[in-house]
Amino acid sequence: MEKERQLLVIFPHPDDEAFGVSGTIATHVKNGTPVTYACLTLGEMGRNMGNPPFATRESLPKIRKQELQNAASILGINDLRMLGYRDKTVEFEDEVKLANHMAEIIADVNPSLVITFYPGYSVHPDHDATGRAVVRAIEQIPENKRPKLHCVAFSKNCVDELGEPDVQHNVSAVTEIKLETIKAHKSQTQLMAAEMAEKLKNNDPQALAWIQNERFWTYKFK
Image (cartoon, rainbow, N blue to C red; front, side, top):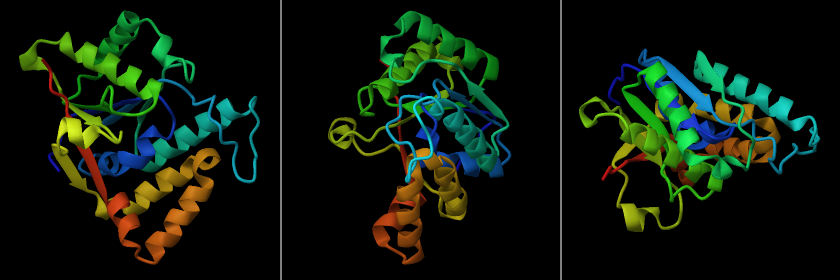
């Protein structure tokens, strides 16, 4: 994996970083790259309350905030920015204002690489809205000064329409960190993390392939 000067990760929800990007983040941290994670919401509208339930609708924002902080600590992220948007409403934010906010963060962090969701190919409206805002922000930067933009996509049609991923990382060296990051989001991942740990213990090939490989598409600016 190429060493970056500065990595900026922008996602809308706590745990978005855990599943498909935490191995990449952990590797960059190990390589000495500073990482900033800008998380738009606290995921306060999440459906899961733990299993068995230990959260309520009222307590969930505080719990998910702490889970996010725990995950960032596990990954070695020293610059965690919680932006205060409301979960499941990012798609309704003024697009220009949201893009300008993303542009302010990008200007402040001055990353060599930005990771976000690929707009239109990331299933959740908040994911797509976040990706669109980041793309719009980077488009404002002169082409010769833009950071690289790597996007996460997992819709059923992403490979058919975008082609094969442009970047694939084998993160097997940090799979324990990745699993611990997933576990940190206990209210949302408790059962899944336990099942995944058991599959990994038994060397399940699908589980190993999923946790050891992360893929990204470079955004094709027009």
